[in-house]
Image 1 (spheres, one colour):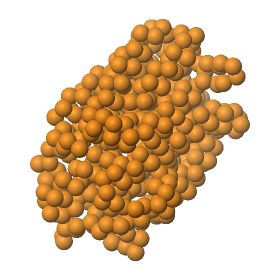
Image 2 (image 1 turned 30 degrees about the vertical axis):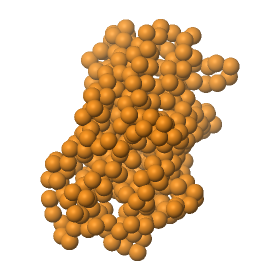
Image 3 (image 1 turned 60 degrees about the vertical axis):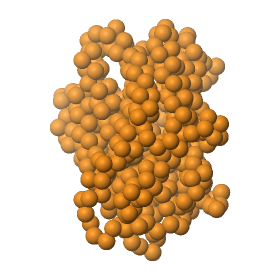
Image 4 (image 1 turned 90 degrees about the vertical axis):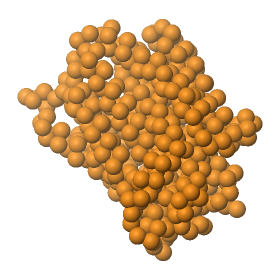
Length: 445
């Protein structure tokens, strides 16, 4: 039986990776790159697509490498211990805007973003795989997974809520604010991500030699195929909403909304969802027991997400309805909070199924597909957001003469309508697709 301190220690890993680095990359980076850094909307779309599709290859490779690691710190923990500092440093550098022209900025952004994805993979794939070797008890796996999600959402809540106030404290230009916050948040992520409080109790059943057979076995593993598609869809769902939130506040509601002294900018707007996900992520194991299975609990969560997303579409595009918008963000986040821990617990089930069927452990490889689906879903959704905004009439870039960021809206109603669709009906369609895939998922736990 694992101690509470270990469960909290495991949660800190996703507080760093999910609650700080990934949350800022998902929510702040699209708007940062177009409106502060000075990339064109096309460059931003291409950057997010190329860098994260690169991870579709590197994540399974990292999983296979991690499965074969032997050290005095264990199989997966050394990647957390020695990867934490590079994770924080590269993240900080990504939020710095160099004094370069359009080509120099493009090279800087692409190089650092690719490096960030590589470092994130080297830390987060082994971190996810830890769940498979800390315990063999199914209920305890659910608890670890729930603590993980609570850690991610709790830190996401703190990060997003404090963001506008920290910007005010730092002062100066927006580029200066982002650079300073990059250093602060990068240092915090490095401290939390090291995984020193966790233990590996189980020994993976290792293959003697490297082989491509585990990769081939994945595509004969029906539970893995359906769960990976479900994972991609959940990140499509989150990716559309996170990537477009900044544009929604800026261009549909015409900037920050202040209510009774509370500054509601795009990070605070999504913070209401983070705290809801934290609460209901903690309740996910009880909810799963109540409905009878992980699959049923996931289905109910997807229904909540679909209905609330459709309802959001019908809210008038006016700041005076901000609390109604917040209410639907909260309801949507109840569904996200329920299904987020379930996804990782179901990956543990798929890893157990693969070990039983094939005779050797591919835990790292299985869990790497979880981070792969996370990045693939975020890559496509983030690129589509930038691409569709560009088609609607959003133009951004750096003025070669002055080096200043320039944003032009050629068709404001079309851009606003596209933003609203990307936050509501696009995610709703993805939630309905998740329901179909869950019906086909064969593990009944």
